[in-house]
Length: 553
Picture 1 (cartoon, rainbow, N blue to C red):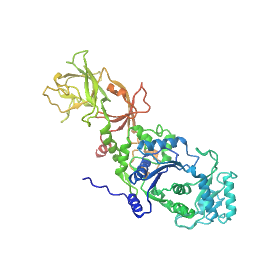
Picture 2 (spheres, rainbow, N blue to C red):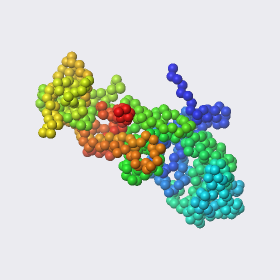
Picture 3 (spheres, rainbow, N blue to C red):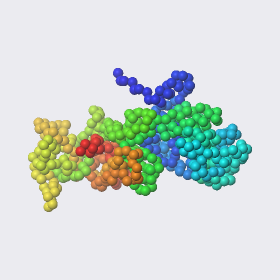
Picture 4 (cartoon, rainbow, N blue to C red):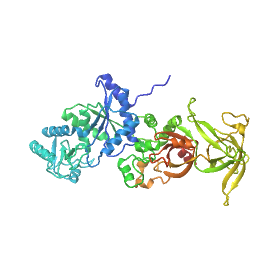
């Protein structure tokens, strides 16, 4: 009997809330700001929010926190929706903080009428100076004691567009000596004369995140507002707004964000990489964005498994990227069709194979599936093998091809190396081999047993493809600990392009979204740059953890 998985701390909170009758159902939300593409850190939040709703029969809304018109675009909205669906989740409602602008404005008016908010003419520098320090209380703004009537008139004039950007803000009136710096009269609204991707030019004042977020949760009756740990100091303000507005009491809970080795999760820095052309775009297969890892060939199943394995913690920690790569390899091993591709070709002439003869061999597409399909492969007198599969002076326990040594060609025949041909520079240019006609795979009557098996392609029928070998974007394990420019730690070996490698002809039928294991070379997928005339394949992963191998050296 399988051991029952223990609950994480958020599941414990939810189960206690349901048992106590505090809630009869749960509602969560995934609230991205549409100012960039989602990354693997967001995947953890998506899996958590949607996973909790699925487990407890609740619902999850997709809500775009679109309160900053300067940085937000419809392109990002559509990209985010596509990423959530690709991960395998469907939201209950698609909502936008901008839908609530009229209601949020009225909430602000309510605070003004209660004497809990005021219009401040101070500059941003003056407001920052008024805040004080963590060990020193702040000082009151000279505009803090404006009357309710004056504040209402000024706030309405702000809404009417009578003032330029930065000339006035609306601040909460809380406590300038509060131990939580965020509670020292935080800004609730600012003036921005900017075109909004949904509301156009209707508004020129926009709520700050801390004001819009909790109230949006409340409007939607979100029971458990799940955020990452950096929002712990914000929880007090979240509760203060809801409590003083006397609206539905949504409550915030925090978990550790995803920090991963050799990875950068800052959207600002990722945008910098894109703008400065260090990568080809948001969907560059080296990027930790969901569109990037999808293009690289990662599967949603692998990412969900990874998020499940790392769990939900209360403290920040650094997750080894090798765990994600393990999950990817584990899933691809089950679903990837096998193909033979030769990266560094060495020609082999089978001298006793009749000239002009060709035959069709078969090989399994999915060795993991006993009832799997077979594919056809042309075979003839001349083939190509990997250059590394031949050693002129073999080392001990070398079971691949060597002078006088036998090896099996995958799904074909046993061959023996009889002669080496070299060019004028002394480089091996061709091998002359003989084959055992009775050793055909699936019908071997030769009685010969060999330990080595190598892959190959037909010299007469191969197709040329381009292969892009992707690796980790950074070469420092903990990018959060670097104290200089993060761009100094870009891995110069993160992309190697092999413009022409030789592939079996079946790969000509590859389709976007299909996954392949190139035998002994790794997992690959067709790139979005590919055309009918130029097939391009991205390496999703090696067959094993090559970085661990390097560390041991």
